[in-house]
Each structure stands twice: as C-alpha cells, then as structure tokens.
Amino acid sequence: MASEIKALEQIEYPERDGRPMGETDLHRDWMIRLIRLLQFRYRDQRAYVSGDLLLYYVEGNPKVCVVPDVFLVKDHPPGRRRVYKLWEEGQSPHVVIEVTSLKTRKADVLKLRKFREIGVAEVFLYDPTGDYLKPPLHGYRLIDGEYVTIEPNSEGRIRSVELHAELGLEDDGSLAIHDADSGERWMTAEEAADAEREAAEARSLDLEAEVQRLRRRLEELDN
Image 1 (tube, rainbow, N blue to C red):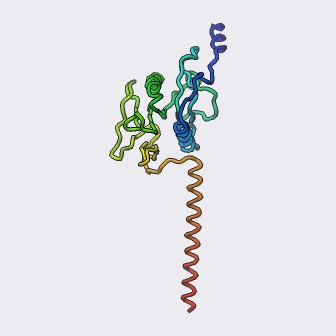
Image 2 (cartoon, rainbow, N blue to C red):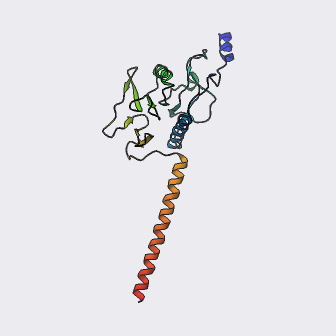
Image 3 (tube, rainbow, N blue to C red):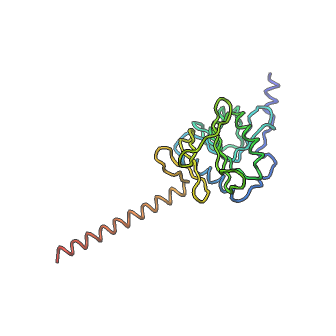
C-alpha cells in the first residue's frame, strides 16, 4: 500500500497538454471576457472561476484530462491553481462555457462527453463568428446522466439554473448574461466601474442643473 501511494505521489500532471491554442483573437477575447464576467459576478461568494486550465479526473492517469474554456465551481475555495485535480478538489464544475468554432467542433463534441462523464451540471456552447453553430448559442443540462438541450424562452434566451441567469445573443451576435430575476446585465469589474463613474457624472450634472434652476427662481422672485 505504501509503495502504491508513493507511486501515485510521483506521477506528474503537466500544466500544458502540449497542444497550441490555435484560436483567433476573437475566441481568446471571449474566453477572457466570460471568465471576467463570472469573476465579478461571484466576487463576494465562495466560488472558483477559471478557464483554459487542465482538469484531471482520474487519479494516477495524467492522460485522462479535459481543458474547459471557462468554468465555475460554486461553494468552493477560490484562489489560483496550476491544474485542477478532481479527486483532490472533490467537486466537478457546475457550469462550463465553451467558445467553439468550426475548427474546434470535433474536439468540443469529445469535451461534451468528458463533461458528462465527470458530472458537469450545465454546458453552454457559444460560436462568436456563427460559422457553424446554428443558432450560435446552445445550452445543455445534465439530467439522469445525459445532456438535454435547454430550449430558449420567448425572448430567445437560455436559462441557466446553476447561474440563476439567462444567456442570450445581442443584435450584433455577442453573448450577454442577464440576472434571472432583475434582468440586469452582468458586467466585468471594469464595466461596473465605468458604469458607476458615468452614473456619478450624471448625478453631478443633475445637481448642477437643479442649482441653476433654483438660482433662476430666486432671481425671478427678487425681481
């Protein structure tokens, strides 16, 4: 038993799979953006958000792995990791978002099988160029060990139970995530800061306009 444990400890789990990313700037930008959206949304919660990270799910076999583009593990310790070892973490991702393309479509089908095997509750595929996925956004929910397509609602959005949100496409084809209750659109930290700054500027302008209005009123009363 001791020798078996020692052998397991000596097994290396590479941080790279040896394959080039080979994606366009657009696909990479969307991966980064989705990670940042999730990071800001879950900033005050106990959750782990990552992407393009090797996830190993069979102890002792580093050849068995998958690399989700973007993923979320809820109620899980945050912090940086070099790889994600499922047997150590004890929790599969709750949500995976794949930024797919015509080039990666076959690999993404294989990924779906692996996500099903490890029990990822929801998977979303987004094709930002619309080259092959029609419509460009698909969602799947794991039910009784099989992925079932999540049908869009009347607004064309796909409901995510795990995110408590709705994913949908804007007029320009970009992906947006909205809170399921308020309908508020998710933002990155930078977007939230910009929005707050614009709101503060608007409040300042409104206050200045009100001051000017009161001054004119006083002048009218004096006359």
